[in-house]
Amino acid sequence: MEIVNFKSVVSKYKAVFFDAYGVLKNHKGILPGVQNTFDYLIENNIDYYILTNDASRSPIRLAEGYQANGITAITPDRMISSGMLAREYLQYKVKKGTVAYLGTSGSAHYIETTGLKTISISEVQLDYVDELEAIVFLDDEGFNWNTDINKIINILRRKNMPVIVANTDISYPVNKNEISIAVGALADMVEEIIGKTFIRFGKPDAQMFMFAYEQVMAKNYISKDEILMVGDTLRTDIIGGNKFGLDTVLVLTGNIMPDQAEMKIASTGIIPNYVCESVVI
Image (cartoon, rainbow, N blue to C red):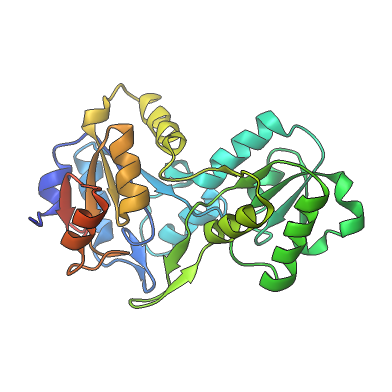
């Protein structure tokens, strides 16, 4: 397995899609030197977007996290969150009524901007579930894992309604050696218990890449072979990019450690076009 310099790779493309956690930042914050990467992209007229399965905050709040650390090139219009796709679904398929959500009040932004009424799962009373039109899994914080997960199960046993999962990630790294359960894993568990199929958004789903591709095409015609997808996870970023027809880069600053990369690629059969230590130029 050859590890190549990111600058030598990205210079061949007209646009680049970055995953966020594990690529641009980690548990310590923004990776040192990332600002240089965005300076290079701007200087060379390479378009860029951040594709994240993080539906815990609005694009404005997500961008503020970078800007507060000096990465002023990442603005809200550069953020593409899986929460945006969930919002689009709600706009077309759930046009009125109350939607219950699992997550923080900040994550409820994606529902509130549709004009729908929102209520936290913690505030739902089982005797009044007929008022609900949908449930959305947004974030793994902002609720009681024991009582509120049980409540969702019993709500869905009483009433059949759409369940939208705005973040398909099953885990995320909290430090160099440990991971935590993500909201996608909670949704998988509930789905298995009640035996119903949920609607999922986020990588590796093609809709996420199509949404980003439409943003690029709105500015200028660029073919898929001129776009690079950069991620740290084979089963979301890399396979999603591969299936959509993009060239892909696996970076070794997130989920996959350098000494595991070759084995992981071989065992999964998910093959990136390139492997780089990081995106830092």
